[in-house]
Image (tube, rainbow over all chains, first blue to last red; front, side, top):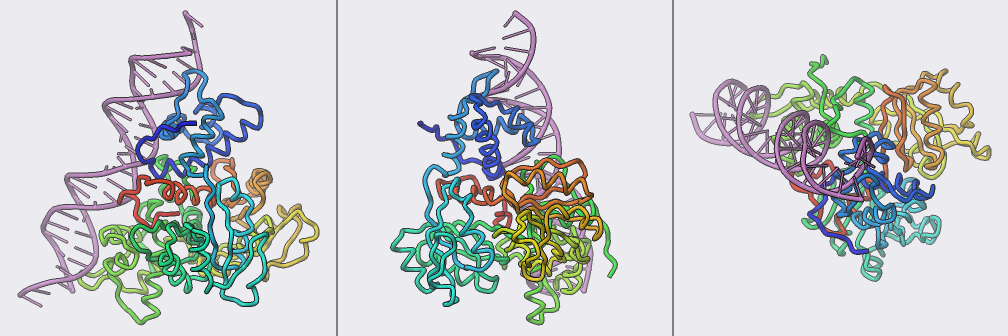
Length: 224
Length: 224
DNA sequence: TAGATTGTTAATCGATTAACAATC
DNA sequence: TAGATTGTTAATCGATTAACAATC
């Protein structure tokens, strides 16, 4: 399939695409051939207008009255998310969270393959998380070079995170996905993505505490 | 300390407050008594204007030239995040992710205390994650009622998530923090917060794939 | 004092939402 | 056909950013 290249897709749209993909895949498994923005919107409690606009960002064309061909839509979303090619990644930190992430089978469907785990605890070195072997963190750089790793996942304690991030950037890693509760400094050009439990909890905590501004501006799907 | 009540704080501001809190606490540990918006902004690579505006949402008053008294600022942030009172919570799903979350000590500093874990696997029932005991999921409702639980964390597989969410809402839980890769439907009035690994990964994946719109509109700290 | 910083009001920016013609 | 849906352009909304007087 040839994908029409439009301008860059806004981040809020990117964030909704995985949900669309899940819903559409579910329909496909039920034998549905055509999906409309209305159907997706109802399932996710969004407006059809927003779904339509988001889908238009993927460069796909629909047909009035019937919607979008389901296989084309799936392809277009996967392509725009960059999930059509497998990304090999490493994870540093083999504690509870590291184990949860390295062993998470769901990553397969995102094209994310964690092929090495690293820890500074020599007792863990040589062990496995699922099928992923644990190496000593001092061998991270050579592993990255030998396997042309572009993505690194950080799951170490907060105080160790900046050092690992710097080392990742220094050996050529282009994207860093940080789970440590710390804001990291990385060189320009290195893509940094946080998944900060404190931030997520802050929103629900503040909402429980008292009503905070939610409005309709931020759709429910943006919650994280 | 008396906290001035202003209007509801915008979600983007709420999301930045935990980072401010971390930075300011770090300064406090170094003996700093006054903190300016400029200092926080430089540390987090944000603009001083944004930090100042965010801080003003907390209702605290600063002093020109010197900034904000550090203890007052810490108090005000904690208060507005709702982290000044401990929230007792349960977690359902004692797999890798559930174990990582239930055993995560960092929650203490957010005022989050997980006091019970639930799983449908009878082999796990009776065991512990850290200090948290694992109960059978069928006892969840009575536990919630007996302990006046308001917050539930979902860490079960995608296909089980909706059922757990419905059960949580039915027994009076007010806030649901969902880690399952599934969009949930909950009754009006129940607060839903997602932490969806697919969504987080989508952003970094799409950025790695090709340049996407980042701009300066979304500050780096919003990355998750 | 001079200069840095606060606090507030206005301008800007971009995502969301509305409107509506085109179409199958 | 009638009606639902797409695709696009314009309006709205609210967060970000700029501007600037007040202040210690």
